[in-house]
Length: 552
Picture 1 (spheres, helix red, strand yellow):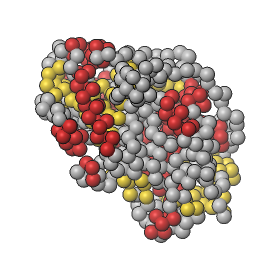
Picture 2 (spheres, rainbow, N blue to C red):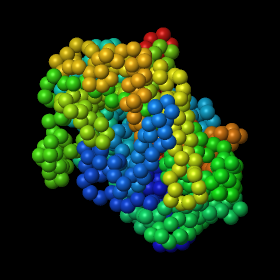
Picture 3 (cartoon, one colour):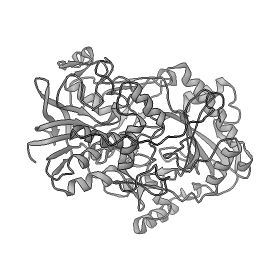
Picture 4 (cartoon, rainbow, N blue to C red):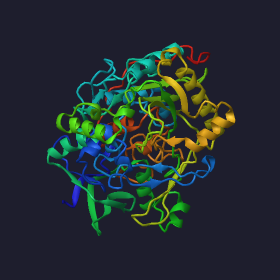
């Protein structure tokens, strides 16, 4: 391993792999990627249907556990983060959502100048090869293959028909002109395999010969000469090592690890750093603040017909599915099974969708456990823009200590109102005539959970994270004391150090965060190289013309 590189990237996840690919594109710049995790080889990661396994394995997951949540009765929710090449893109649900145009408008209005929808859409196009998406909104020659499942289970068509009967619309591509509505889901799967950023970006980057990857590297801190970043100190196999960057260091370690590394490097809230035994270099209150996530509940309904995926959960059926996938990369193993998605507005006066639906033709949890009663189907449903905020803080100055992760879930009164609307709107959809041949009783919340109090109790006891942490190194104007990086991803108060991952999001975007995280790496690469950003797009996305007075 060389000791001096042009650029050092910390983290090989969604943004980090994209950065390695673009920064090293000329074949001349020397790039080092530091990653603590190891290989992503094997069916548990590469087979899409096996998605519940890697996020529950110590080998692939950092194993973070959030602090007890007062509003959730003291429950501690897990916070899976990828500890493997490809980062969380190697353990996620492979659901691909760009976010809504309104999300990026908010970013720009919040001080992230140059990150409006017209600015980011060209980067989404550059990074994609969309198979089945809506032209000309989608990319056609990017590294990231985005595909759709077969949707051959009749429950998919019945559910979309039920949404239309309830007054909503079908959308051909929620990543195209119109997000609002229900339709086929995009997934990062290609030729039957998980198309993580390790597969899409990192391996092609490594093949050029000018990008090095070091695994097993637990980064302790960024090194500085004065206030200029010069390199990185990390621990590998018990040995403390240093590498140096001639140009810049780029943090792409994610919403939990990026603020943690910044704080250990002396950049963060002064009192937090001092309490942890770290000498402050830059007192920046926003480092680790602004933590956001999506919460969701699993709305489960018993099915009258034995057509759900429940019939494939036995050991023999799983063996057949696994064998077909192993030899042919086809069959049920080649899909994440989240093949229908939807976005709606919860009420009149909401400008763009604030509720997301994932439809799944089985009643099951992320740990792979099905309810005892057998055949059922479920909707993952939750609000998109909670006002609750949390934080990530180091506890001490040790490189191997887990940080304090406090989400403060459901700490805002509106969170409860939003979930009540989610439950009641879902019941209205499921109660439509197209679901009559399939709908039996509610497994959960249960037919009796109708009052505000009963719904709140269900949410308190059963709400789960969608595993979308972000926002902890907020991007914004340099004169905003809550900002940590400027609109070119440069850490405010120091030189030669940037952050490019989901931690810089000013506010969480609609849907799953893998797509926006990759886009962030793509766009940041142009800023780092001093290139003019891609020309702004002129496309006009859909906003409901009667949003002020109509809910649908």
